[in-house]
Length: 592
Image 1: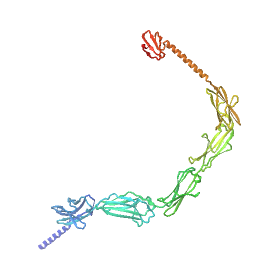
Image 2 (image 1 turned 90 degrees about the vertical axis):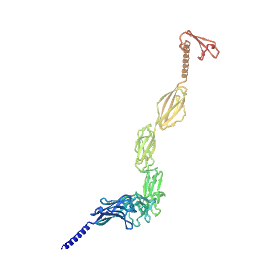
Image 3 (image 1 turned 180 degrees about the vertical axis):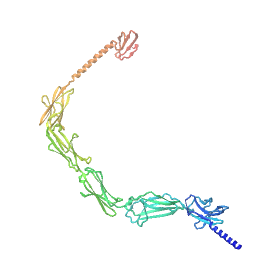
């Protein structure tokens, strides 16, 4: 009975130890992946649970080679730690066993993108392992884009090259997406074709080039194309874009336009007109013709210049465009109107009136726009409107009247006409009726200005009624003018006579002759005065008043030659004799 109980106890203990061992096995936990940038440091953590603790554990790190084998790179037990020599990681790894086991890999390279294995072995709990895949990333350079430099026709049968994008040195492989505006472009047979090529650089990095081909439409002339590049980075994705490019699209014209380039605004006679004709195609390869429908005149050009236009240039002008590829014609026309203002026509029932009578005149000009009329005399506006009324006319009314017609709507559009008004009446000599003239000259010019119509006849007479001049008279705006030169010998009276069929007028010129005897008498008086003055001066000199000396003076005239006269002057105050020559120079005594 005792033996049986002992056996049962042993079996129970074995079962208990077996159950305890199953519950206390080693458990290893690792991340599926660890992401790191190229040339950075990667840290792979190996977490485990075991009752033995780290001191009773054996730790081994390895990686899976390209052939699928495990290559050990690190070993650790209770006695030692060892980095395996001769592996790609010998000089680049370190392991921290404090707490969780952390494998650090410095200066990560693309070749490090492998699976790392952490094997943990316990003395009592068995062993377990975990695996982590190391992923390496490198952001690519900025992408570049290049558009096609030549134009693309909408008539091409196959998709044409639009441009190419390229991004270099990325890992993993970057992705390129083309956009037109905000719309991504996907390959569509015979419409859009995106062709990409991948290059593996010597560094192991990837470069991607993408070429866009598509069939263009006219609307694509304003489109903007660019590329979007997406690439992986640790923890997610990133994106960058290229600059925008445009393309030149060739398309035929579907419509033409004709317009007046200059002048802007309304056109008047005398202007220079510039007509332009253009299609909406690109490029302008069509043949253009401009035709005037009124007289069927044609010009083989897309720009027509008409100089000094008249109202005959008004009408409809048609622009015709013929496509050189399809030989199709399209046309458009425009209406052109040349405003005109004819010559001003002045109409008057008469242009000669007698003093006191009235005169009416009208001024009109044919125009395509409303006009304004003003009457001017001597550059001053005297009336407005196309009718001119002159009442109670006088000689002041006579003269030239200008009728000026303008078009207010168009600057510089004007014309004019003239009206010459003659006022009939007896002559009227301008100025005073009596003029007195005094002169020393032998001749004198006399002028006589006369108003009157018909033009008065002017004659010059003396008191005997005889004509003294036959000089021609000059017709003036108001009448006539005459100038005569009269020879003056004595006092005389001259008459200016003016006459016409309505009467006569005269003016008197009284000429006073001032002789030369007066001048001679004045000259004689002046000479006499000078002689008297000389005598007085000489007398004063003789008396010694001029020299300013006091006392008695003796003047003795000595004998001299004919070229030199010497005078000896003595006084009571000095024994010195001073000899004066006729020139006032001192002479020494021995020269007496």
